[in-house]
Amino acid sequence: MNKPDKRSRPKAKKGVFGRVIKLLFKYYPVMVPLTLFCILFSAVAAAIPDVFIQKVIQVIDNYSATRDWAAASGSLVPMMIFLIIMYIVSLGATTLYTQLMAYITQGFLSKMRCSMFNGMQNLPIRYFDTNKHGDIMSHYTNDIDTLRQLISQALPSLIRAGAVVISVFFVMLYYSLWMTLVLLVGVAAMMIVAKKVGGGSAKYFIRQQQSLGREEGFVQEMMNGQKVIKVFSRERKCEQEFDRINEELCSDSCRANAYANVLGPIIGNIGNVLYVVIAVAGGIFLMANVPNVSISGLALNISIVVPFLNMTKQFTGNVNQLSQQINAVVMGIAGAERIFEVVDEKPEEDNGYVTLVNAEIGKDGSITETEKHTGHWAWKHPHKDGTLTYTELCGDVRMTDVTFGYTEGKEVLHDISVFAEPGQKVAFVGATGAGKTTITNLINRFYDIADGKIRYDGININKIKKSDLRQSLGIVLQETNLFSGTVMDNIRYGRLDATDEECRAAAVLAGADGFITRLPGGYNTELTNNGANLSQGQRQLIAIARAAVADPPVMILDEATSSIDTRTEAIVQRGMDKLMEGRTVFVIAHRLSTVMNSDVIMVLDHGRIIERGSHDELIAKGGTYYRLYTGAFELE
Image 1 (spheres, rainbow, N blue to C red):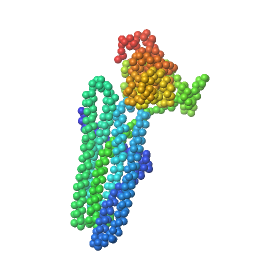
Image 2: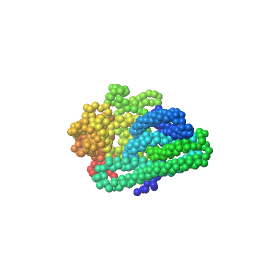
Image 3: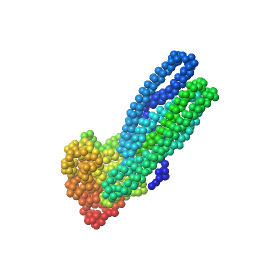
Image 4: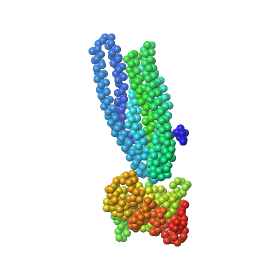
């Protein structure tokens, strides 16, 4: 196992803290300044009692010889009234800023979550293919929580403690320069310790956040793969891997908290020692009749030394509180940095300007754009001269000399050319990894090609807006994803304005109506956890119905019947044949029985098309497809 201290040392990026502050002022331009004013007011009010003590002692000292307590009370009562008023106002300010901070914090976190999620919807598929989903989820939980602690606790404490320290410092400087210099020596020692210990704490708190993200990613991966783990009896292996990741997290957390926990007592005890030093220094100054140097011009006496001790305690206590917030600040910055990484992630590029519109097709072939759903679609193509042209959506898809690789220098497809005319059924056959699914990913523009051309109804797909392009395509993926909600909701996901009758018709077409009506709630049966209460085949039938209700002119079926038994497949195939009537269809299948009626079958091997033709033509050739069909050969 790699020891934690051997790993690279992560550092928080500069400017993250400033960015958080800027966003706070941007989102709450009135509330944040008001909150800041209340915090500063309550902090400054905290320094008043020390001034009050000095005045009280001075009054008592002045009237102690004459014992004129009536005159003394005449001076003390106004000060007491003023002090009470200040305490009441300070209490009001404290109550107000705590309530405002609660509102600002939750509102800010809500906006950050929305910003992350909305930005995530615009990220390319590549991002989700290359990042663990558990680590992505950690942004919404752990990182947001550290940001909450930063805004709701650390920032107000920092501002208030800092303001108290500054206020008390100036009051002390006002009364005595010599006593203040003695204090500064102790404060210098505090700062050195805070820098040394706090720096180590910050380093490991950043590591802790990253380790936590890795652990959550691993746990989610194991939860999704529990069946596979049990089938292959890999529980012990998973335990060992989790123990390794968990040990890294434990090590980082222990070191971070060890530094954090030792910092407070050290600073606190330095403050206690400093209190004694100030008391001794004050006594020496009084006994030696040291001339006082101060802004106030007052002589150094007991009325200054006693409140000075109080101010020392207050000063060192708030310095200690400042040092204690280092950990929350560092963790918050680390969490904010990870959040901003998602927010700043480069969105999916879309330079398309050709859009999909509802259209009415005249008898003479003229195309008119309309707002209502007609069942006919057209591509709306704006030109540089300001004119508009409309092209009927027919489903003519052509790939010419397409080359593509998921990573630079590693090509998956080599000079692929595919021509699918409207209404044609094109099938791709080949071994796993031959490039079948990659071709459909390129038609969807989940990934953009490196070389070649893809045209849709004669239009380069790079010119078509991605959302409109994908709206024109119906897809049934090999991996079925169902969402929390009813069966009806999941079918309607294909077209949100579809009626219940249209959804049921789509289910009948896909062969799903039979099992749906037998469910406890029929179409209103609640699905959870990706439809875990359904079989894999039933889930796939719902996915087919979802594609059917979208009623697209082009269908992509990626192993759409792979999880359906042979008997059910025959039922579904009849529905699929009806669904595919009049549409351009791309079919990916390992079962050759599902592609036999295709107009064109293409055999792929290592990213190249090695054979193409109809079922009968390929059988007559006696080549690779023939040997696959007869079971005499298997693509490797």
